Length: 130
Image 1 (tube, helix red, strand yellow):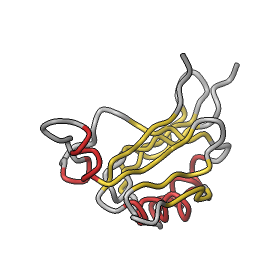
Image 2 (tube, rainbow, N blue to C red):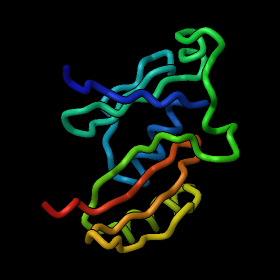
Image 3 (cartoon, rainbow, N blue to C red):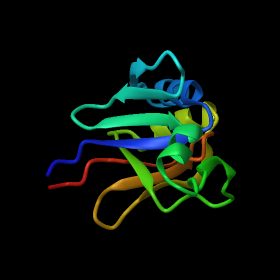
């Protein structure tokens, strides 16, 4: 078994891709001509976005929409960076909502949390010391 990809269901795929590009410097790998599915170039494992309608069609009864939930969902996207403070600030400048400012953890990692305009919970963190 190998972890293949994460798909985040969002109200507007192109806007989510644009946010992650502007806020974190990730590059768009693909956006389907229908606008309902897109991917970012994130390395070995793909981070993808799909329209709510696709998720609702895949799962009987539909999905909980992160953008409509007052609280973040219990799933996060973690992005690793050497400069959490700068990444955090850039995310806020691009429209993210601050949930937790950068904080040095006892194990030596710096971590912050933001929420993307599409509702996605994002952890920004330094690498874990080996």
